[in-house]
Length: 460
Ligand SMILES: Cc1ncc(COP(=O)(O)O)c(C=O)c1O
Image (tube, rainbow, N blue to C red; front, side, top):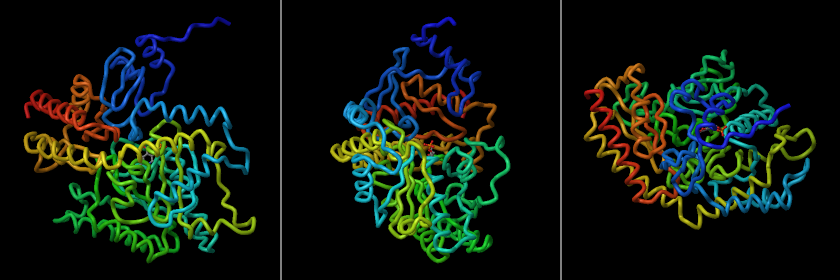
């Protein structure tokens, strides 16, 4: 057997990636045409330095997870120290860091969310939340509740159990038919594209909430386990529901004994300028899924935190046990990363910074909407915002995909030192929570100039 030295320079690495690596949600031929994936060498704050020496602002925080920014040695050291001491718990055991993190979550989450199951990421968190909801009904003798209601435009993960929830154009599921029989899909509370043709956000909020009640009644309340949704959903560029929506959904869930699950995989840990999306919308769920921002991506951690009412049904005789785990659940390295990360978020007031920089961004986006005819809508809150670009403002029709408007925008942004891959017809903007006012200005200016150039090319 001959051994070859691993590739180390940028071109060789890109070439090897094109041959040997699946890069999520892309295909090798397409990436090869662009040269290959961005091979990252180092990163600091909001900036990424690529192997070819180019520097970019990380415009979507990796994948909406880099809350405390890049290059935090403090988190890396906490993981190193933890793993040097004890690298994983034994079966039916726990470690101090994991217990401390569970207690910390009970303290910072709203209402009486109190007991956490840990896993490795957002899809697993949602899988766990859905299983917990169904098992909760079973323990209470409600054996027929297995259906899950989710909303169009949402994303809840890519495992078999989560990928058919929600749905949006950037995540086609045509290879994975059929849609599971327990998944019920309802309209999103999205005023710009309200399926009910509402004439006000309040009307859209009310009709979208009522659509959930109608689905529960149509399916039969005794068959419905849970409603799952992101307090503010990211895939379509930070869709903030009308303020009456979540309070109404909360009431509907209570009325029919349905568990309300918030997917806070992106909204958790400060991104909306509040600690949690639940705080932002003023509604506490029965179970909250989280991931991403809990460690800012320094260790893969996710989880589901439940109210005492839900958690307590799994305590008592052996028949009460919730039969669910992953080998690496409650990894102490992840807990150490999370504790260090949350310490930074608190010490540096990053939740408040997300709010302030979010306002600055919203002002810039409102200005851009005034001057760019290809902007149909700007939306979002905190550091989950986005621009929807359209071929026609009146009809809200999108550009034909053959015009590759998203790729043109991606190129212009990259030319200006901003790393955002623009999907379909949304420019997502979600930088790390550490972004400064000057950096936000640079980012917004790059978006503005990219739109100007693309409009010129398209003759808009
Ligand atoms: C709201 C939401 N839920 C769940 C997931 C899935 O998380 P993961 O990719 O960690 O499995 C994502 C991922 O982007 C997400 O945005």
